[in-house]
Length: 242
Image (cartoon, rainbow, N blue to C red):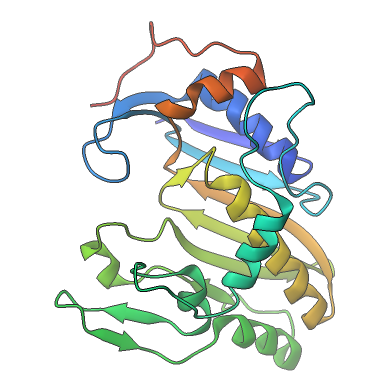
């Protein structure tokens, strides 16, 4: 197992460094279960990303003249952030992150819902405001045991929090994470959530940290990554994971 640590200034820097690093350090394998079954992807064994000033540049910057689509937009990030603040869900979705954060719902194998009415975001804000910052209990969970039976279980599993040095910091874990199509929007929305929660608590915005044993780049995005980084993805002498 190869551990990769990325020290980044802002979210644009984190994304660009991750693209560069996965080309050098990613294992290639064929997907046997999950999204895009049958395709190949590059994936880190384990990656830890620390972003010291995540609010500086929230979305990735694509240099002018590059004919590649941006992975997200500020408009989409703002919509996504609003989405995770509510329990709104369409009939085509098994879950949403917002549903899990503000009104967690589990599901049995026969489809019955198990509701646990608690708004974790407000609970964390209230915990810090009423009882101070000396706690390790302000952790917001997205994953739950019934997810193991879903065809598409949540990628983000928890957002742990800490107020230290006068700032609110987030620690996120993703079981699986799409580097091109997911990471920019996910971290952008989570950062906006953190900024809002910090304001409600009455502290400054802090660092954003995320780890994953499944940060990956699908083969249909390899050409985009090559164009953005100026590197070539070669599979020769690269260990394959079966």
